[in-house]
Image (cartoon, rainbow, N blue to C red; front, top):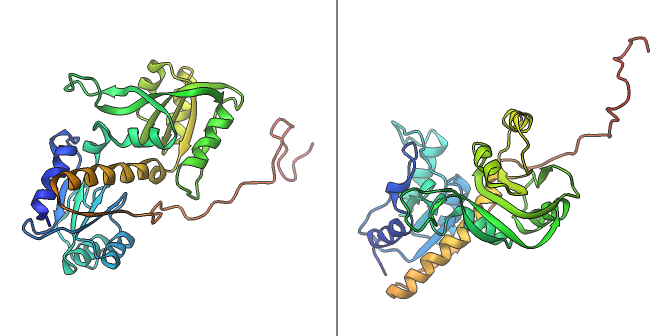
Length: 292
């Protein structure tokens, strides 16, 4: 079996930590570099549910997309939920490694996995990495559909192909509009409206779209149709892609690693109720008790 340091070196070759954003916190959070690794678990979030799953699985290493301590800390006391995660991992001999924005812009990266889950053909990055001479790395992806379909059908495709969450899929635009090109970006994407508009695509699928950025962007200039999915759902496909990459390395090196992907839904939203009954907002409005 390989040592943890060997596995981490392989992961860093896939997602070099120096390519992470300056504000990010990637790399190994805990773990003894000299311990042996036999079983690895991939997940999006380093929360207690995932730590407990790793314990039950007998994993030696968890690889997550989201950092545990993004803004730093001065304590790992178990009085806080993050400290409890660290205590659980160390007590059970489990290491934790994070690949976040360095995995977002990798080739293949988070948005490649998202495009693959939607059966889209990747054409190029949405925001190319200027340090990549081949022009394959970068944030987001511009994609093509094999056959044009309506916005309604494309949104339904996303709802069917992405993991189930309470949020599901919502979209903005003419349901009958034709979609042939799509920009995708796993995770929060409302900072990319300018690049999406410049790309000239028919639709943009991402997560965490907020009222004011969307409203202001749509008012200032036309945007393509928008499809908003749950943050966790847009990034979970990366876990399967990353696990497959590590399995390939394991086979090549003769490590015989047992690699797993967590199917635990760690999206924070647990239920949704539709607003209703439907209201005709085109009718004249009168407040209760006001004269008609």
